[in-house]
Image (tube, rainbow, N blue to C red; front, side, top):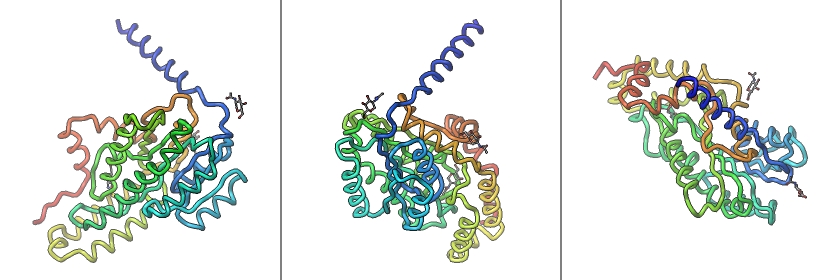
Length: 316
Ligand SMILES: *[C@@H]1O[C@H](CO)[C@@H](O)[C@H](O)[C@H]1NC(C)=O
Ligand SMILES: *[C@@H]1O[C@H](CO)[C@@H](O)[C@H](O)[C@H]1NC(C)=O
Ligand SMILES: CC(=O)N[C@H]1CO[C@H](CO)[C@@H](O)[C@@H]1O
């Protein structure tokens, strides 16, 4: 009995391995637009796909980021400046992409641009703080996708959306988690939408990786500034000790972040170049063995596991 089960599992894994290994030919006539190429995953992916011979259209937020990337890559790679929160910038980018790709259409769109800060207990933040993160991580992604969908449809292409393990389980305040939950919902909905006509949608869920958005000094600087400007009642309710323990737990979390970003960009590359892309990719051991399993646990257990390392509010 067990032997049969093992054999079945073995066969399934073999089948999956074989399926995963089938890579498309003719990558060199495929255009891929990546957002957020100034640094982090986007920057690495742009270089990686450029080396593979794809035609990379790398969208950067800053001129400086674009220039540096251009210097480090081939003549094939082209950069553009894109602020995903600015509708005019998105429309201009879509026009430019249309001119570049012509009748071939756009093969790939990687929605990678994202921000993390503010990280703080929910009560410390204002509506504007939540809006800022939502504008970049969710509404920006939606607008870029909608503007490029006709070109993607023409190529029967691929959309790769970067969510996060924090799109599966939410803890420690801030709008980041909410925005990534939204990315998951948008991606699943779009994949099932009859209007997407053969455009394949993949979601990448990275664990904690060492990128500029998880850099502790900038998070700490932000949190200190936030703390010192909080209303006195809130400061009294939480207390300095809470603040310190909270900062420490964030520091511990980001200091354990994985420096090997290729674990994530390899998933993105697979989603763009495999014959059978997966709908979800999890990248990093923490994602695979902690956060994703955690998201299937009963809520009481997940709550316990996620809140026990955090400082408890003992005052009030
Ligand atoms: C690759 O593209 C060329 C022209 O673009 C075409 O002639 C050839 O058949 C393609 N090969 C494959 C395997 O699709
Ligand atoms: C990073 O991950 C890739 C797999 O994507 C692996 O091939 C490589 O050896 C890793 N690099 C380091 C320094 O661990
Ligand atoms: C703002 C923010 O990112 N909040 C939290 C979302 O959840 C993760 C863990 O899943 C926390 O590390 C984040 O701080």
